[in-house]
Length: 139
Image (cartoon, rainbow, N blue to C red; front, side, top):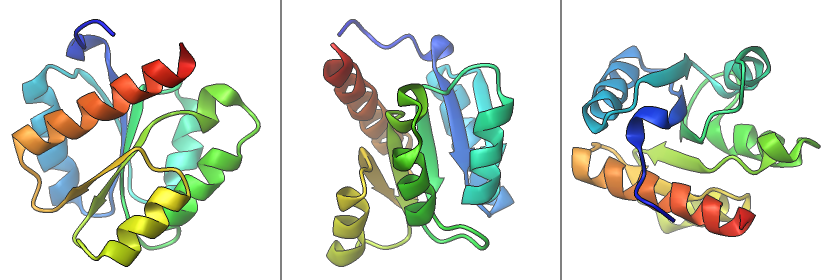
């Protein structure tokens, strides 16, 4: 895959904490990402996917949220009949480095995870890996 052109990458960011949304958006903007859609829980994230003009290239999703958590969101995303939706790479944000939680997330089809606090370098590496893996799968 060629170098990632960050300005062409669209991200759906799902997190119930406004501070974390702003922090991640700022880090994404620093990378060069200009299109970031935001939702405050998994249910809102699924609704956002229906409303935006085209699917995002990647989804960054918190695990612990009210209404619908990140695991349930990812399960529903992977069960969607539309391949343009069910193959979107998902990178999970978590305050847990607990192996059981990460393993459960991997089983339902996440493409990477970031343990909070989030660094610029880790965000860049995890997104690059998820985007390149997704491109390799579709080739």
